[in-house]
Image (cartoon, rainbow, N blue to C red; front, side, top):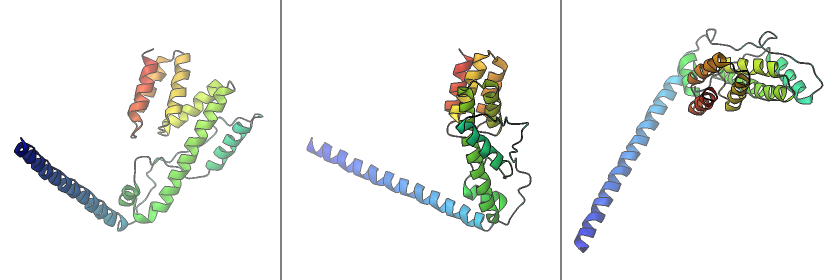
Length: 202
């Protein structure tokens, strides 16, 4: 019996050593590939960013309400501030990806554009929620639809928009919202898709 246990322990130790070495090689290979891409990215020449899908803020795309509410006023002020900024939704792209595609010299500029999008997304979220709370459902809907078209992956905004569509029995809009959710490239995609789908199945 003791010999069997000893044999099992030896086999386990040998298996564990193999797995540790295998894991170490995998990590090393991943690190090597990362630094190879990073080195290539850092040497990539600057390329034009004119073809990128810049986000434009205007009074046609968003409501700019002037009402006596502090949150609304802050949101409108931030939107006015962002109107003249370059805005890009670069969700899912790493710094290495951006340098490889557009050159290392463009990284700072592209990062600023992405930061502007983060600010925009947060503002749209706050703005839509407050509009809805105050009874401005149509305006909230317009803000949320704009956010979705920019590629937002905010679960709360998708959920609120789905609630509005459900309340209006707007099946076509719910189907389109599900289509947009399925186009997302984010770790939240499955959660958002399931949430919108639950509104459709009600």
